[in-house]
Image 1 (tube, rainbow, N blue to C red):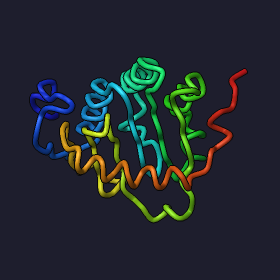
Image 2 (image 1 turned 30 degrees about the vertical axis):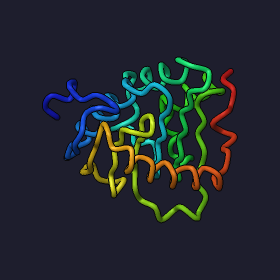
Image 3 (image 1 turned 90 degrees about the vertical axis):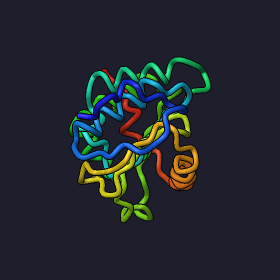
Length: 171
C-alpha cells in the first residue's frame, strides 16, 4: 500500500513512486485514471486484470472518455485473444463507448516488447519494465518520460491492427 497516494496530483506532484505489488499498481492506475482530464494510453501484452479489471478503474476510464468530445482512451495489447476470452471490463466499456475508447492489437513487430504502462494526460505514468511482474515506477508529473512513452505508443498504434472482436455488438 502506497502512503499518501491521495495527496499526489496529476501534473503537479514531483518524484517517482516505487511500485512493488499488484496492489500498488492497481492503486496508482486508479489514481491516475481518476485524475486524467484528456487521455489515457495503456500498453502491454494484455490488459492485466490485477491492475486494470476493476469496476472502479472501469468507471474512471468511462468518466474520462465521456467528459469531453475530444477525449481519447487508446489501448494496445499483444495478446488480444486472452483479453477477450477473460471478459475484461474495459472490452465491454469500449464496445459501449466506441467513439472515445479504442483497443487495438499490436503487430508481431512489437511482440518482444514486454513492458506495460499507462500514461495519463501525457504527464503521469505507471511503468513496469516486465509486464509479468509488478515492480515498477509511477510518477504524477513526468512529462518528459511520459512523452517518450507516448511517442513509442503512437508509433506502435500506427502499425497496429484494429481488432474486429473488440467492436462486436452485444445481443
